[in-house]
Image 1 (cartoon, rainbow, N blue to C red):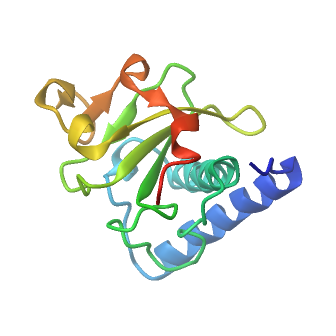
Image 2 (spheres, rainbow, N blue to C red; image 1 turned 135 degrees about the horizontal axis):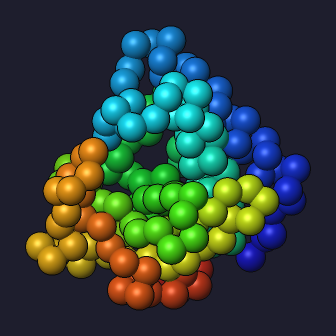
Amino acid sequence: MALPTLENLHRAREFGLARYDASRQQGRRHRYGGSQRYTPEELRERDGQSAAAEYLASCLLNRAWLANRLVPDDPKLGDLEGGVQVRWTEYPQGRLAVHETDPEHNSYLLVVEVLPHMRLVGWIPGLEAMAPYWWEVNQDWPAFMVKQHALRPWEELINAVP
């Protein structure tokens, strides 16, 4: 397991900001309607923090970061090799969001808090995350919202076969 430096995490954040800018310059909109809740500046920062979360997970799980380019990633492949989708929230007790259109064969990993305090919480297979009891419509974009207590330890993904 390679521990990332704070400097590299900030570089990943900067990459996420550039990724946001490139998407908007190409006329693409936020995939899950974030523009209804956040200002463009807030959405940009959220993309930066999300990229840092992806990079952190990549380092700690020793998996290649697949979403490290300025073009949209293929959601079927995941953010990390082996079909791992990284989901980030700034809330320490936040839940893991999985959408109806997300691939059920992927694994979903929750990362919480902002730099420099980010931490991996846990993961869940897509099929388990998409159980009807996690479904919520009382938000900007309906999704399966998995509580942290239902997640498996993130360390299980270190030795899992990608």
